[in-house]
Amino acid sequence: MKQKKKNILLQFLGDYRFNSILVKNFFSILFVLLCIFAVLIWQVSRKMDEVIENEVATMSQNSLNQTKERMDTLMNEVVQISGQMSLDQDIMMFLLPEGDGTRNQEATFQAKERIKMYSGIFDYIDSIYVYSSKSRYVVTSDGGGPLGEFDDLTWYVNLTERIYEPGRMVSRQKRQGYPYLLSYIQPVRLTQMQFLGGIIVNIDVDKMDEQIAADASDTLLIVDDRDNVIFSTKQDYLMKKWTELSIYPLLDRDEDAGAQTVHMGERDLVLTALHSTDFKWRYVSVVPMDKYKEYQRDFRNFYLLMVILILVLSVVAAVLISVYSYNPVKNILNLLKNPDLFDAKVDMEQEFRQDEIHEITGNIVRNFYSNKQMQKELEDYLNLVNKAQITALQAQISPHFLFNTLENLRWRAIAICKGDNEVSQIILNLSEMLRVSLDNSQQIISLADEIKNARLYIEILQLRYADKIKVEWNVEEDLKNCQIVKVSLQPLIENAVYHGIKPMRGQGIIRILVFRDKDRVKIQVHDNGVGMPEEECRQLNEDLKGMYQLKEGHIGVRNVAQRLKLILGDDAVMFLESAPGEGTTVSIELPLRFMESYD
Image (tube, rainbow, N blue to C red; front, top):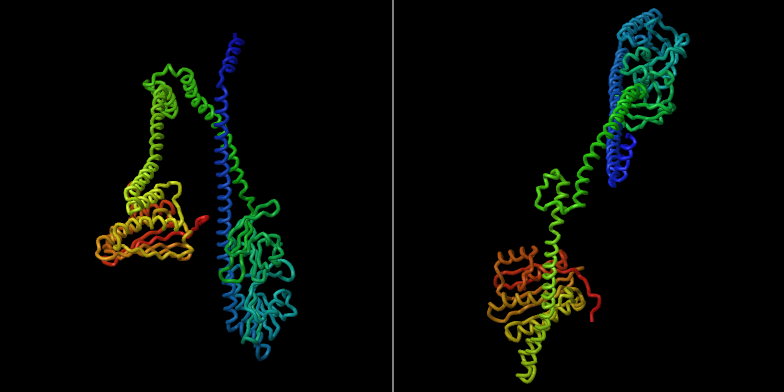
């Protein structure tokens, strides 16, 4: 029985031809979800690493800044002590011994007492030496003696070789061995050139560690302006050149670089450098990233847990979405198999939910039942197309009919008058003008052809108005082959005659100028007619700047401007200048282009 049910299930899955859609949807959705979550996790992990790194850098910089402020304060205190001692009367008496031995012993004793007082002010002061170059005697809080018998002289060379330099901080070893001391050496001079001796304030390096705001694993260095490491929490770096240390090449020497994360071998380090506010040295801290690794490991374990959880949720979501999205496909397949079972007017909400699937199924049903109606409409459209073709053919015949009719009228006038006459000439000119105007095969012609067409119109006008109109042409010869939109001059001449010259008394003169201006052609049509008011001229110029629809049967200045813009675009410019009683000038500016050939 179980085997039979199993066979039925396998047969059902094998016969179901769209069974693979469910599987494909499942893996596709699962893949998309995993990719999205993977990208999100990667971005969050990357961002968190940056946040951790920036936080470590900020903490390191803040810690170093606190250390800098404390150390600068400490150093300023040492400098202040040294300065006060150099001005102390008892100290000066020791530096300038005079008189007998008893008096000198008294000065040495007073200097020793002063040194004890200054040494006890701060606990980080290890000792203070006062050296007199005149007596070659050193006095300390514990005693002193002649220079040759003094057991700690590692400061002496630095003092005597740089007696004309200001006070400086140096790192040295006491008695050529441990402990390390940080000594502030202050030369004392009576005048600029008279050297008296020096004051050496020795700082206990071990007690300076208390001023450092850092962990034991961090390393702090103080580097002077000569690249000497004058202080370091790591003794291996003391009394060495900064440029000789292994971390030197890793540090960006840019003053504004701040904290930097660098790789040194298998370790990641945070290097931070700050310049001292009061002294010519800089503070450098080296913080290992290892102490933050545990925090990073916990964070990555959290990532792993999230990945596993997201994987499980993605599988569940992919299954639910796949099954949910497959049911509408099944309904659509049934609809495609049996479209006649559905009424076009049926309420689709009863069979399909209100979503994109509802729209698809609704369109399928409507498309099936509107097919016959569409076929009938298609037949009607074909009939309309045939009628449109017939109309277009008739429109092609109309110009030929008009030309033929004008030609018959011309020959009839010649026959009646027994030869050419004014009527036949007008008909001939009109026929030629119509031929050029109605020819749609070419919108750009040469200036010579346009002038020829305009002269035909002028001849017709002069037959009617006799001596009332005079036309003067001034055209540069080398421009006759340049391009111009056809029927551009005739409307302007007509406008000059009927709006400018006809209303006036006396002879009207139309001057047509064509000349070159660099890479443009300028055409001016001027009449000495009645002109127009300033407001009317301004409004007309505004109209010429715009774009108007061509209206059939309207030929004039606006028509010419419209065709120029449609054919040449913004390269064509047209404007008017006019005043009452002074005539009107219509100017056209076109790009200078020549026809390919000109006979």
